[in-house]
Amino acid sequence: MKTIINIYNHLLAYSDNVGNTDNPQQRNYDWARRLSSVKASKTASDTLELQPGETRTLLNEAISLGIGIGDQLSLSFVKGSTYKLSIDTGTGAFKTGRAVTGLDGTTVGVVTNNNAVATFAFDGAVDLSSVQVGDCMRIAGVSTFATTPYAFEDINSGIWKVLSVVGQVVQVSRGTECFAGIAETSDPLASTDVQFYAPDGVAEGDNILIDDPFSAASHGSYRVVDATADCVYFTSTAPIPEESGVIADADTISVYKKARFLIYVESDQKTILRINGDTSDTIQIKPIAAGDPSLVGLFQYTGLCYQLEIVNNSVNQSTVRYFTAE
Image (tube, rainbow, N blue to C red):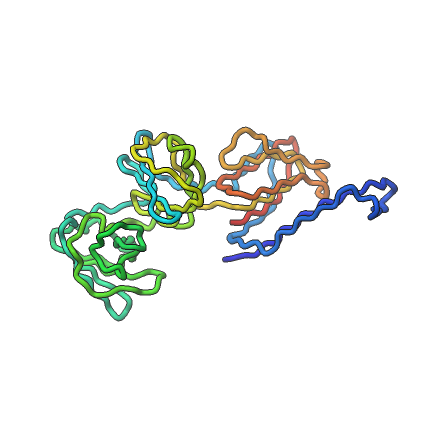
């Protein structure tokens, strides 16, 4: 659900020092910043009671990729601002792939039905025994960032949801998309023309982090626009170098399901914030008057936040209020 946020900050200091006169002629600082109609989604807020020394994790939904030390990765340019990160060899995967054999050199007959269901009939040499109802069938084409030539008409390309699989016949729908497809017999296939994988793992809208040993110019966080079992497509506004044969270490690639661009925290006790895995404990909130709910300490952060821990660093119970937005 989309949300509109208005963010107002106002700092106003007087120097008359005579009771509470707040003489407007003796203001030594008056600055207001109003960020109006900021588009956001998935806003969340709560009040927490933390015991002395307690740590509370508010945000940390990492996706298990299984990329191990020694897996071989590559990074390539696709088009426009879109790039592709691939797992070339190793045990890692961005989704659970389905092993389908016998595709090379075969053809597929496609029939469309009035109920927005299409039937793909594969040759008898194709083994679809690993495919399950609910899986994604990916047909190569322009919409899937594939390269020519394509075995199918482009209107049949894209992502289909598997409704049934019997032998070499798969019935599929477009899921939540508007139906688009035509009857045809495909050209001889390459193994990359049709892929099957589970709808788990990395998905559009997730955030992928790239680190060493890729080039320093590639380090950063990027928004995922598409994913298969062995590759992820993402966008970058800055140019990224193409690289191949990159040997992964434990922290080369991370993907997070949830990330926030706005964090606001206030606390009535000394509090530590750990953002994006930082353990230096340099971000500390100190209240103006400990235990006074009208003189709390506060912290506001704008930028990518995919991990957030709050630590009560005092000897007293703390009351923490927070707000986050995606």
